[in-house]
Image (cartoon, rainbow, N blue to C red; front, side, top):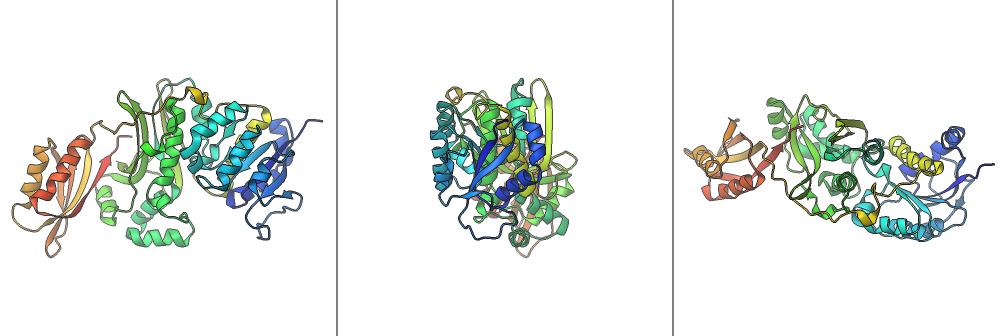
Length: 428
């Protein structure tokens, strides 16, 4: 009889219970597809008495995830607790130290410690699989490590946080301001316990750094990701972008240049007719560009019990089949340190600012832009307030350095009220 693959699942939240349900509902199908039974030996969670809508009575219980990770009847440690360090990292290290394979959905842990964990795994003959850590049910890790392995990847970009995409598309469809939609998302349970992880771009930045490592053969470098969240996007920005044929998305972009690896996660304007522009609600989308294949677009659910558990099971079945691959697509010792580079490719920018409503204010702004070498493509002025005039400017292509120079020069004009908003218009 074929030996079963025995799992120890740490973390019985939404995703963990989703994995349990799949194994219980599709035991025969999983055996047929992997060539061996997949069974759960033991589980671990903070509370044993919580009602989790699944029968766990047939599994051993460990209060300590480290003890679970090192059990003799566990072949694969499935880490679904979350958190960059603490119990999740301790238990993962314990599993790897004794040569057990690890499947995880923990993007924060891998973004901060991926290189050292990969080195430990390979030294012990173990593997780490993390399809569920990036873009939920979308098989983007498998696409990069397998389907596109014959390509030199030119660029990876996408919408990788469903909560931010929900907030931005909900603002547009409802006409509600950011603060109202943020509160709505909170009440619906869409936000992390620390909302900054979502709206500050940190969660999506973790995911981008993992994809960049695979795509460009570099060590994970989350600290080098340029992060800007969506907190400053106003309903006026949403409306102005729509007037010009654009949508605003929290967009991650990674590409290798002669100067080094660019990684940025920030709000961008994208054409409303593009695949990214048409992405609504909590859906994710990842776009990959290879020298041989051209552009590939993957779209799907970026979170939730079913989609994320589906990604976890894909990794488990690969291990059951005996398929083994280096954590980030090539041996950890051959991953090069990522030299961080800021984006220098010229792009048009959207600028919004409040000007004092007095003669010559616009001329002063135009002069500062001109001195920075920036030309104006379009300019609009919207309804006056009592003492200010909202002004919208779309520039021709310029570099971020030139734009920053102009932004710093606006203060000296003494006509700009508050801090201007600048958003890159991305070519997709």
